[in-house]
Image (tube, rainbow, N blue to C red):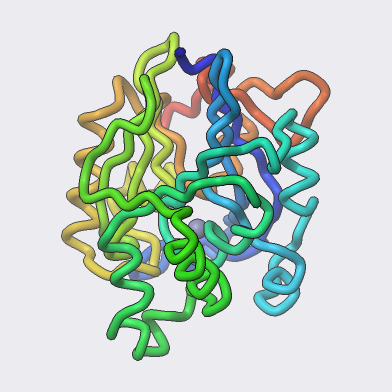
Length: 268
Ligand SMILES: [Zn+2]
């Protein structure tokens, strides 16, 4: 069983200034919006694996994000039936990655030990640390542990042939990334190890970070894992939609298992 394709599926957007995306700000007052994605790893002869669950209408409203399309509809439009999904990799427990666990009634959720300890432990006693976490998804994940629907990982693990997770931390204590073997080589779904290609290239973290040194080490590990920057898929970059080939007939779904159609010279 091998990976046949990987989709990046956009479901939401947040208009913002560049200064909001880098520790220490940015000299330019330019717009630098974030897109919100979930990813689907398709395999021959097995249900797709979904990476992250996105958030719903209530969180979008409360946090001022624009929900372009509810995640379940976005998945269906990409050919993924959420009820048929048996495995969901949760890269970390932030609201925009773990906010729709209930869309997957038959799934097992893959998470790092350190992330679950982090989002249920003393760090959440600090307002600034819990700002990007919502209590409901965290509570829902605890319920799934009690229902035998969570698979914990500690570091690196092979989930399926061609699909591995690795703990990297930095952005959150237990952030994991996904390494996928594709026809064009290893593709790394970096999630929020880098929100944007610019975080990766400038080597300046996104301002939500628990350990800056660990964040920077994670960038090095991802670089070492991927054959080129074109094989790294950041968590929130609108460039992903712009650079990779669109799934036929879809403007919010791109194939990141395929080579990008174009590449900006400054992104190396
Ligand atoms: Zn995020």
